[in-house]
Amino acid sequence: MKLFFHTLSNGIRLVHHRTDGMVAHCGLIINTGSRNEMEAEHGMAHFIEHMLFKGTRKHKYIYILTHLDEVGGELNAYTTKEETAIYSSVLKEDFEKAVDMISDISFNSVFPEEEIEKEKDVIIDEINSYLDTPSELIFDDFEELAFQGQRLGRNILGTPETVKSFTRRDLEKFVAKNYNTHQMVFCSVGNIPDDVSLKLFNKYFGSFPAKTKKNGLGKIPSYTPSSITKHKKTYQNHCIIGNVAYPVRDKRRIGMSLLNNILGGQGMNSRLNISLREKRGLAYNVESSYNAYHDTGLFSIYFGTDSQNLEKSIAITYSELNRLRTTKLGTIQLSKAKTQVKGYLARGYEHYESLMLSMGKNLLINNKIDSLEEICKKLEVITSSQLLDISNEVFEPSRLSTLIYK
Image (cartoon, rainbow, N blue to C red):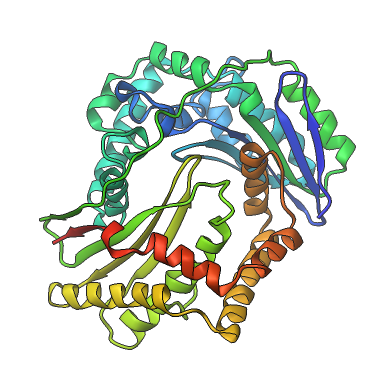
C-alpha cells in the first residue's frame, strides 16, 4: 500500500492513499477524547463534537448540514475515550469541498449560545435513550467498574447535570487546552493525486498557528477485580466478565486480538457463540471485545440470557476461558485462527472509509502505519505458547471482574 506523508510547519500531519474509484474519503483525527476531561467537564468532548456542526465564522449551521449532502456526500464525526474524528465521504470531484468543510468546522466554530442550549436537550435525550438500552449501558458501567474513580472509567456522553452546566466559555477553554495541532492527523483515501492532496492540505490547514501544549490523560488507571449485581427492570439478564489487558503499543496486543477473535469475535465459529448459542441455545447475543488504550486495555465478554440460564452461561464462559489457559492451540487450529483474522483485515483494507480512519489513528498514536503485509507477518510469528501465556495472564479467574444486570 503506497502512502503519501507530509507535515505542516504547525505540526498537523497528512497521510494520503490514492485508490481507484469515484468516491473519496477524508477526515481529521484529533488526539482528544473524554479521557481529557476534568470531572466538571464530563461529556464535554462529545458535546463539542456536536457543536462543531452548529456554525463557524464563515457559515451558518444550515450551510454546514446541507452543503455536502446536496452533492450526495456525507459529513460525520465521533468521539471516543481518547480521540475525536471529523470525516467525510464525497464524489472525488467534490473532494475539495469536503477538505474545506472539515477545516472550517474544526478550527472556526463559534459555538452560538442559542445552539448550545438546544444541543443540551438533544444530548440529554441521547443519554436517556442510552439508559433505556441495557445491552449498551452495561459496557459503560463495566468500564466504570474496572477503572473506578478515574477519567478512563467515565462514559463519553456525560451526565444531564454536567451537560446542563456547560457554557460557551467552557467549550472555548476546553478546545484551547486540548485541541493541539501537533496532535492532529488529516487522512484521506481516494482517486486524488498526491500533489493535489498536498495542495489542498496546505491551502486549508497550513494557515493555522501551531499549538503544542500537552493535554493530560490523567493518572495511569489502576484496577482491582470486583463483582457487582445491579437489579434493573429488564426481561433478560445481562452479564459482562472481563479484565484489564494490554495498551495499544504493547507487542502482546496482536496476540490478545487473536485470542479475542477465537473466543468471541465476529465469526459465527467463535468458541462462545458455538458453546452458548449454537450447542445449547442459551444466548442470542454473545461477544467478546478488546479495547487498547494509551496506557492500558480492557477485555470483556458480554452475553444476554434468561434468568434461569444465567449461572449455566457463566459456568460455560469460565470453562472456555480455562480451556484457553490450559490447552495449547494445535497447529491446524492456530493456522485457521490466523487465516480468519487475515481475512477480516483484508476486507477492512478494502473498506476505504474505515481504512482512512484507521490510517489516521495509527499515525496519530504510533507515528507509523503498518501495511497489511506487515501486520500479517506479525500475526504469523505468534506461537501457541505465547497465546497460552497471554491467556493465563488475562483470563486468570482471580483477576476477572463481573457485572450483572438482573
